[in-house]
Image (cartoon, rainbow, N blue to C red; front, side):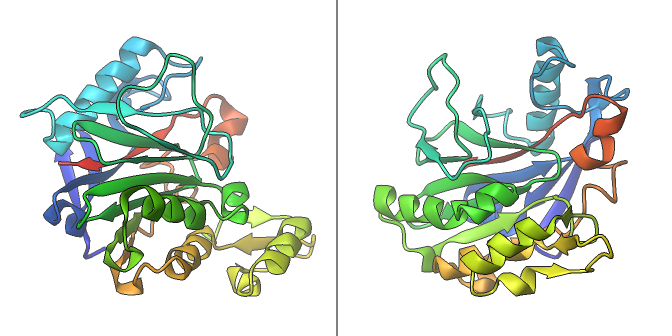
Length: 269
């Protein structure tokens, strides 16, 4: 955790990637603490859905930005999309159209924009190009990972902004860990067929035929295969399922009712 800094303001706790900040970017992951949503009380839900209100989400985002100290000198726009577990991406040049865009990765080189990735167990992946001043935020569940969303998103970063992956920095945030991410034999089979390193992603084989998958390792392999240097990949290791006092977890909470969403943001400072 040496590459991260925890910042707390009036109960709101955020996790900031220090190397990315030092390179001139806003790069941070939220927790569930310090908000006004009733999921349960005082939850920092950062995504609007039927179990919460627009007023709550707006106040939670204000608090989140304040804790990051990015709202004092500017008013960045948080951009989110309808995430559908795809490998599709969208280039953000300004405000999005009113019709929701369905994709799972966002890219930009525009200032005063924060790309927002919504998660509650899936892996958020943030990538910055310090030389060409461009960023990408990625939502990587197992379906997107199987479809190589990280590799495809970095390829688009290269195509669009002339980035060299060797120069890029990457960070992964809170997500369900291998300790808790149980998947079926059919999922393991397709991963092992698709990736040469597929067998390395699974352990803790269960008597019921299920195994536990390392989602973070799977996406680290994609980052490295895309040309990002391993020493420039920074991981926040917390498992959302194990630490539901600090994070939202879909697998851990859905049986009891609505589940809030964490927000990971990346943008030019």
